[in-house]
Image 1 (cartoon, rainbow, N blue to C red):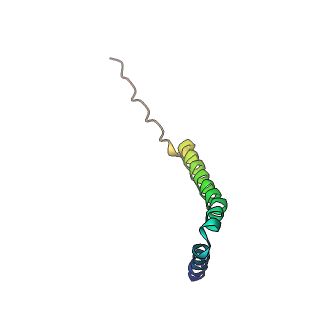
Image 2 (tube, rainbow, N blue to C red):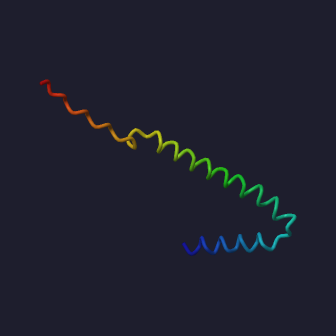
Image 3 (tube, rainbow, N blue to C red):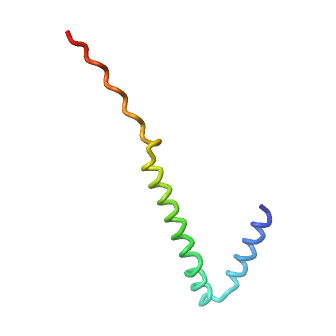
Length: 68
């Protein structure tokens, strides 16, 4: 996990040192599609969970009526 933290620190440092005129397009080209993809993934998982028959409880059977 340490390698991931070091890699991310390097990317972050590289991005912060870029001029703003370069930072903006990089963020728009990389971060915007990434966020859109994650949002769509979350939406599909939520839809699947809502439509999953296992998530809907079965109705309890009605008690039989006794004729008097």
